[in-house]
Length: 146
Image (cartoon, rainbow, N blue to C red):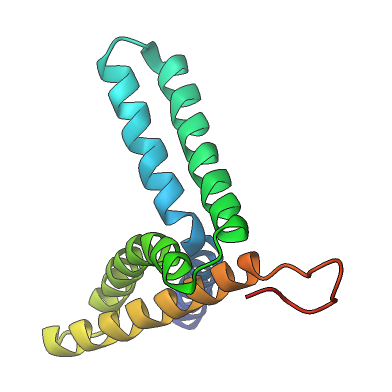
């Protein structure tokens, strides 16, 4: 029975890591949506109004970022846009990995080391996903635009 518990825990950790890597790009829109929803609720919009404002703010954030990544030409500006998305994902990756590491190892030093490694992995994954979103095929040349 203990063996099944260990396997279930490993499967849950694997699922959470997969979920973190897939949803890391949406950390900034989620953060903005939650803050907009809290603000709307605080101003008296009610639960439904707060949810709608939060969803609208998150969707607009993601759409604006994708539009900017397509339209903006200078590389430094694209890197700044990508950094705005990567930074919250790195923080989320750090704390998600720290939460997992606290259950797996008693040493705080190793917990922090693995948390930093997890944060770097999530940041790189997020940056690569953003780069894939930004690289669209040019219709006239057939080459990827930079």
